[in-house]
Each structure stands twice: as C-alpha cells, then as structure tokens.
Picture (cartoon, rainbow, N blue to C red):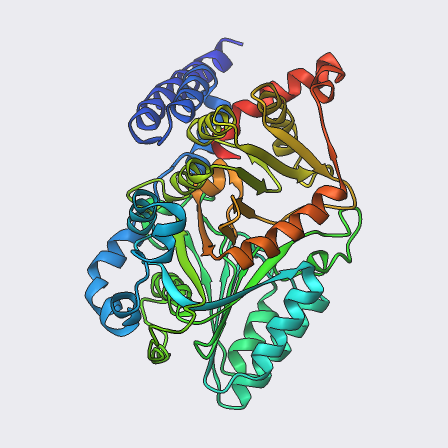
Length: 483
C-alpha cells in the first residue's frame, strides 16, 4: 500500500499542476467567458478527467489559416479576386434602401465582400431536388467543377457523385474535390484513390497542418459548396449521404434546403472555396472568373447577394455577429430554422430585444434528435426562449436540418450555419444573404409549409419533464460552448 501511494501521489499532484497550467491557458485563450469558466473549473477540479479532452477540444482560435491567407493575400486577390467586387458593387443601392445603410456597411465589412446585383437565386427543397440540380450542372460542365462538402459517405449517393466527377475528369474538365477530414473520417481510401486515379484533384481539409493545431478536433470545415464553370453555384445544408435524401431511418424524411445561385455572386462563393483549397494544398485552383456582363442602368438588376464566409480564423466572431445583425435588422419578423438551438448570449439577447420591439420572432427546430447532448441543451434554451416571448416550433414529419433566416419581407439568408456555438466560433461556414422581395416571398412560402407541419410548443415541454431530465438539460447546457 505504501509503495502504491508513493507512485500514485506524485501522479495526482502532477495532474493537478498540469490542470492549473491548462486552466490558465483556457482563461487566456478561450473566446467566451462561459467557455473559459467551464474549462478552468473542470481542469482545476478534475484534471485527470479533463486534461485529455482539453488537448483535443480546448482551442477556440484556429491558427495558421489567417496567416496563410495574409501571406498569400496579394496572389489570392490578383488571381481569384472577382473584378466585379469593385465594378458591380450594389452595397449602396437596393440593399441600403431595404436594410439601411448602417446594416449594409457592417455586413459587408464583416464578410469582407460587397453586395452584388444581377443574380438569380432559387430554393432547392430537400435532397432529391438539390442533388438532381447538382448532378445536372456537373453533367453540363465544360471547363471546371469545384466540390466541397463536410460529410461525404461511400454509399449510393456518394458513388453517384464519385462517378459523375470521374466522368467529367475523363472528358478533360478540371475537377476539384475538397472534403473535411473530421466530418468524412470514415470515407475509405479506395473512394479517394479512385478519384485521384481518374485525374480529380482531391484533398482533405485537415486543420492539423500546423503543429499548434495538431491535436484539435474542434475546428471543422462545415461548408457545402458546388460550382460549375463560374456560372452556377450551390450552397446550403445538404451533405453527401443517403440520409440527406431521406432514405435512412429513424431520422427520415430529412428536411433540408439548398440554393442555386447564378450571376456575379458565384465568383464570391468560389473565392471562399479558393481560400479553403489554398489552405489544404498551398496552391490555387486553376479556374477563371467569368467576365461580368455589361450593366444596363435601365434594366432590372436582379437579386442582390452578399456571401458571408465565417470561421475560427476570423478576427471577429463573424457568424455570431451576422446573426445578431440579421436579427437587429428585423422590423416585422425574423424567422429562423436550425437543427440546433444553442445560441450564445449575444444572439439570445438580440432575439429577446426583437420581441420587445414587437417583431414576430419564430424559431423552427427538430422534434427528433441526432445528438443527445445538443438536443437536451436545446430543450432548455427553448424554454428560456418561450419565457422571453419567442415562438418555438418543432418540425414533426422527420429531422429538420435546414439553415434559413428570413428578415421581414425583403431578405433571406441560406447556407450552412446553425444557431449554435459550434457554427458561431468553431466551424468554417458560409451563408448567402439575398435581398429581393420575390425571393423572400418564396422563402416565406416554404417556411409557412414547414410551420404547417410543425407543433408550436409551450412551457409544459420543460415543466412536465421529469426532475432527472431537467437536471440533464442543465448539465448539457454547461457544454454549450463546445456543442
């Protein structure tokens, strides 16, 4: 016994010393006070249980990406910066008239891109419509195809994508394929090997390229981007897997939304891919930005679009601030759909203030769960939201995965960002904000159909839960900084 204590005692002491060092690191580097407190307390009190998780999940700032972007900025801007950013900017036109000059100024500075006119955007509701459009666009590609997904599975849909990309590469079309190394961790080597053997430029987006990120699992590239010949681009919530077609119980039918963008905003979407590709390969993809069509001042300028990329390498907390500004812009209504309801304090405060202004604030979330801890935390945030006057709806037919924001009757944003801390601070995301009353009407109709298939909840969802379930909700919320 004495021999065991002589060995165990120093190990316990060492663990507590390392825990205090790690706690100091968390206090100095964690972005939010809630996250810093959560890590610091757990590292000091239970270092033997939390030291290893902190190594993998503790960092909240992604190192290297911004440095690489800054070092190669001139090259990136020269070869990939769309000329219409300067010549076709509509930031002072229709967007300002509809949203206000201050909001437009903040959003364009936040995303680093201007509003661009002359676009056409359409919603693609659910997986069949989305992938039919994507495969049709790929099949008609003449020059190049770029594809980026968070999750790629080697199933029936994944095989269709692989075969489509291989077929285009064999026709001499340049094909670039980027996938997240964590989201697609189970993608087999044979899948990647087949693409590369056919001439498809294929790379994982791995965040551990630099030593400082070596052990981190927190940072994930959650973007979904497809672009063909610089003419059409697709952005939204779908990944590549049969579950996104609604073919995998128990979450089916799967409810999701993508958009197809045509026009100058395609170049902005491609620029986001270019930065990711440059991080993954230290090279720039070889594709040209299509020449901008001449602008007829007397003609309809089409839809005005702003592409907002965000991620843990940003100086600002871009995604969270985007939601805050979108909510603050609402004068009549702000409708948000998200699979997860784990907002940070800034976004939650903006939602509560919108209610006090008399805005119709609605949030549509799933009734089924895909992540137990996140779902439990979402239940508690839903209860807090109800007490603040926010209307919460649960989608009934299947799992709801779409990411949509509707602002009044003038604008809508669709993309990959969820209403949670992971999207706000840990994931690379992309949203496309479209200012156009016709498109806003299209999104409104889509969401009204979703609300018709949803159940509006009240406070009884929380109050009637057992004491144990309520405790679990509160415990789950403690982990909200990393959910």
